[in-house]
Image 1 (cartoon, rainbow, N blue to C red):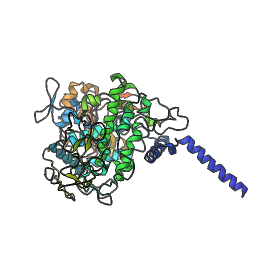
Image 2 (cartoon, one colour):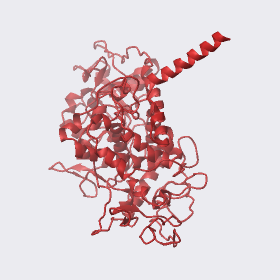
Image 3 (cartoon, helix red, strand yellow):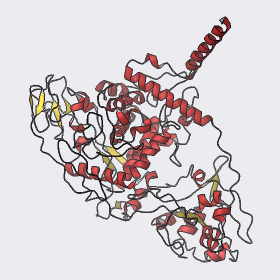
Image 4 (tube, rainbow, N blue to C red):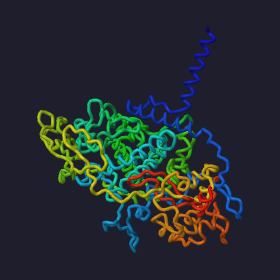
Length: 639
């Protein structure tokens, strides 16, 4: 018995020691909410470390089929592996300039390099404004775009990226948190702009709600914006009512105000006052031995407060992306980070200064040169690029006011002159609290304050146009809200379905899709029927992509010969010899080598390629291209 007790005690001590070495002590967090956030970050970090320690499955050399009379082909990587480190944007969502984005928005580049849209207007960086600062037209169009993304499945794809990567990569629990979410939010914004180029991802400046008598009464949580919830937390009206979640729930879930708080002015000022990079791109899940301990006021920690305050789906990373609140919250987090960059760093430092790679402080997926999974060709350090705010988007700062100019620029905000320095505060919806010194203010939206509550009929509705293919009308409680999509793009969706080799079709015809599925299903997706291309694959001399001329002018016919010969044959003057002649070995000139455009960055070959978007306005088709000129001929031969 005594021995058993000693063993039990020893095991208990070992567990305690293991925990002390494994992660920081969350019990020292100054608030219960920060304790929850700390425990979440450490749990996600443990999951990420476990994932990084698992050996990758071994894949033997991937060989393409041979061409008669040509040297034995060299091994190539899987296409997804080949995309790592590629300098050319693989999708519209990868773009880091308006020139890159222009063709996907059906625009054209003028003589001075300006992109002009079909409307005749120049394409400009997206202007991110506080949600309540959108005009009625902008808000209606934004809601329409979000619902279109929801209906065509693109929103679900976007949400899955976050839920699946959140516990296995560098999205949370360390220095890559802010760069990762910057890239992620940019991609969501591009998905919106593919539908309506004039839109941007608004931000939710929750500090505007924090200073209300009760933040839960904010007009944001009415049918005009985020929508109201029933007693069970289900979102029942507004633009996001009846949105089925990734987990299969019939609606988004929220439990606003149950715990934690929204962003506060004190928290923002604490962030802006930091001077050390490792207190902004912070080690938020350090292990025993890490020489740096994060401040409890660092941005990743305090950004978790609004997550917990909203509750429901927002409470955990695996479900938070179900709720549009998540994207606007992170747009604000990105603004806070950008304000810090502008205040505390030089332009050069913004792109180069990154915390040291210390295994005891963060898992390797947060290291400076680690791939920013799952974004092909992007490293964590790339998330510091000035190109984001130079080229892709800009911010309108959070509204402010003064005694001399008590206007916050929105019908949904008012200037509070009675609680210290003048500040903009959100108005309250009907029935909301208006006490605590707000009785004589303009806090009540479309109403007045009586006995500490906002009263007065709220008669506003958003402009209404039926959403295409919408089968469920959102339930309403206080007003009728339908979604306008009249300005959304009606251009047929671009389908990312191509081969990556000019002999794919020939090989497919000769049965190679079955005999050599590892290579063929990766490099010859169009010919193997993995997707349906938007062009006629049997046409011998044509261009398969609208950017062929642009890429040719950039020298890609030579630099990216393998891909361009198959998919930009006409522009690259590659129509002779024919695919059949090349792929049967009858051509007098040799075809491009399967590794002609391959560069070795590490031990894995990296292929330069110029693939189009994997997802566009109304389609989520998988990428599918031929990768070789002989694809169609080989298909006819049964390859």
